[in-house]
Image 1 (cartoon, rainbow, N blue to C red):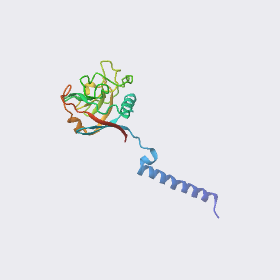
Image 2: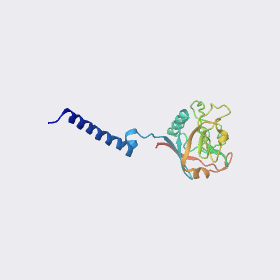
Image 3: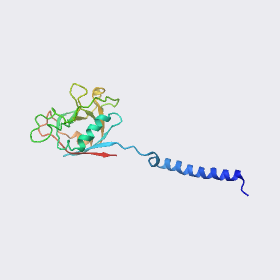
Image 4: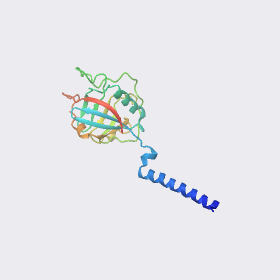
Length: 195
């Protein structure tokens, strides 16, 4: 005859097996139970290759939102790299003047959206980091951005970091230099992917 104590022991044993199975599954595959965080990536296709930039909504949500909006509208497609300084950075993103037959004013424009407030953060401007271009007023980011060729930590705390190149830095290194370059490289197409 089953005593209440044996039945309680059996129930506890069943719960222990179920808990072990769930806990074991979580250890074997933490994303199955905890959910994997994805980040938006800005994928730039240039004539020389593809650049994958992981965006950082956790440190600069308003900047990332703007980049995503302009990318999804197709505004970056065809935009040139209008200011490329060897050993420093490559700047692009002028969706107003940075494409078409006459790009003589590239670097002077932005989008039809209002400027974005600065979101200074503790991420340093190291090689491959992507920052928001602006005027002397820190709250004037609109559409232009730059990618650092080398260490640019002297910009820390003065410009907003919102991304980092995770693949294709060799493509960035190959961008034609000049202010503006005689024959500028351009963003053939831009898209957002969540990874």
